[in-house]
Length: 371
Image (spheres, rainbow, N blue to C red):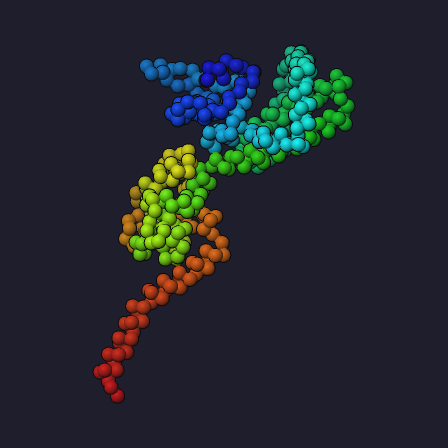
C-alpha cells in the first residue's frame, strides 16, 4: 500500500473499508501504515532503517487519497489531516439531483474534456499558476481563521485554493460570466465551511481525552466500579452510578471515589482497562500526558511520577486524582445538591468526637461539684 500511494503521484487513490478485510493485527498494521502516509502529507516524512540498519528513504503519500467506509480507524492526528464527508447526508433529496447531474457529466465525457483543457492551460504557464495557487492558499488560511484543527484548515485551504484559478480561467474562456463565477465561489466556499464544522466534530470525537471522559457511561454498564474511599464499600449515594448493584461491586476495580470532595482516584492499572473498553487509541503514558496538559490531573503529591499522584483519603495509598466536575455526567444541580448534603453529613460525623468530649467535661464537672 505504501508503494502504491507513493508511485501514484498526482493520481487519485481509493481505500475502501480498511478495517474489515483481514485479521485484527493485519488491520492495525494497515492503519499504522496509512497514518504514516497521512503524517507525511503534513511534511513530516522521514527515512527509516532496514532490518540490517541501512538507511531506507521514506515513501510519502503523493496521491490524492480517498478513504471510504463506516469508520476511519484513525487516531486524532490522522483524522485531522482528512476532510470527512457524510455520504448519507450528501445523498439526501436536497443533494441527490446535483449528484446525478455530475454523474451524468462523467458518463458523457464532459469531465474528461474539462480536465484535458485544464491540463493544457496549466502546461502553458505552470510556474505562474503555482505562484497564484500559493498566494490563494495563503489568503484562504487567513480567512479560515484559527477555528478547528490547524491540519484541517490547511487541507481545506489547499482544496479551495485552486477554485479561484479555475473560475478565472473559465471566465477567460467565456464559459461563465463574472456573476456566475461569484455565485459558484460563494457556494463552494460556504459548503466547505460546513465541511470544516463536521471535520472539527470528527476530530473531537477521536480525541483520547474526550473519549476518556466517557468513563461514567462505562461505569453504568457494570463492567467496572469505584469504591467509596471513606468506607471501603459502596458509595453512600447513587452506588449504581459507580458500578455497584445491591451492595456488591461489579467487574474491574478502577479506584476510589470521594463524593464530599467530588473527586475520583484511579489506580495505574485502571487506564489500560478503560482504554480496552473505550478504545482511546493511546497508551497510558501518552494519555497521562494529555490529561495533565488539559489540567485534569491533580498535582498534590510530592515525588514519584512527576508529582501527578495524590494521596487517597482513607489510607489507600496514592492514585491519579481527577475532579468529578471534569465529567459532564457528574455535574449539574443534582450533583451539587448531593455534594452539599454529603459535606453536611461529614461535618456532623467529624464534629461528634469534639461534642462528645465537651459533654464528658460538663458531666465530670457536675459530678465533682454537685452544687
